[in-house]
Image 1 (tube, rainbow, N blue to C red):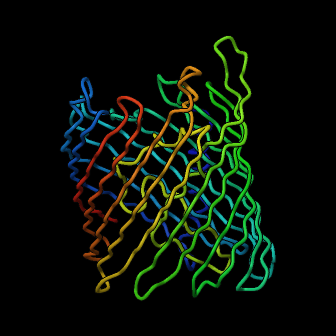
Image 2: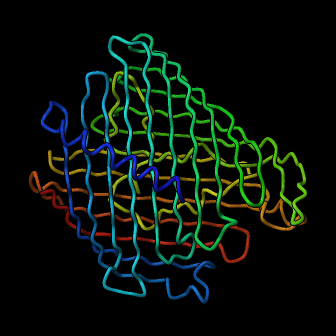
Image 3: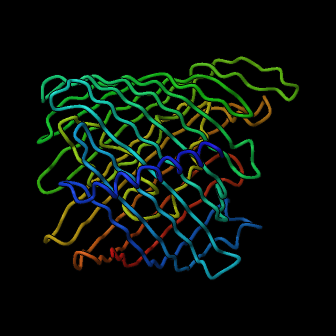
Length: 397
């Protein structure tokens, strides 16, 4: 996908600035290498023959990362690059991931206006029972009007997300969103954010509009950092593309959510009070989570609700514990099916994850993670249950 290549190229273009500024206060450039052992176990209709060979996967993986940040007179820039080879010595089971992210903010302090941007891209090549070879890119631009320190602040965000799936053009899509948001609360206490706006989408099967809204909270309870987000997607109008090219306009009481936002532990709550539940590169805790993919992102034409809860706590100075829970409820038509079968999709997804990190010294950390995910879908061959255990070491030269 051309947009993915452009996003990764844009991320690479930031590295000269990061290299020049890494000696400044608050700036850094950190490479890393991780060696991981993973064990995955799956069951359910999605693992029926000929996919039954994917029920169990014990493998070793190697990952390379590069993270950097630079503080500028009027703002800050951050960028991350990440590459992972899953089971690289096995020609049959090998999987490849590549991701890049760049984001920045300008303004604040003496200025009442804050401009933010974020661009993230991901490429995956791995045989899975759900979504295998895909690439996607998402870019956001936000302008915030800052008021008093405790708010409320008002902002406007525009975004574009595109995905292509190799060999499955029906899974390709692009969507654009315009969201207005209000944020209030100070950086030393709970921060609240409410956003709502229209979203337009286009696929080979249909195109249309929907309304997306979200409410999120982040704060400190005792020694734990917590975040909670609820999103609602309400379909407005869908135009079904017929085989002959003649569309069928419909008003369907069902669609998807805000651009996927995953709570990222350690996301700072600065004076600008930017959104806390932000999508990470590949997962909220570990360098990569093979349980996560963009499979649930094709939910057009359906009403969808999602709750994400996250808690992170430091124990003893060198030990981090992070727990996450995500629940989704989805109802509505399958826009890729024939007309009599469209209003039939019923999906419930539940996932939980526990991540442990032990800092041995400034350059070495041990990581462990356990995860479980269950999807119930009334369509044949799509339901599954899957678990993951991962152990590894991260080195930071």
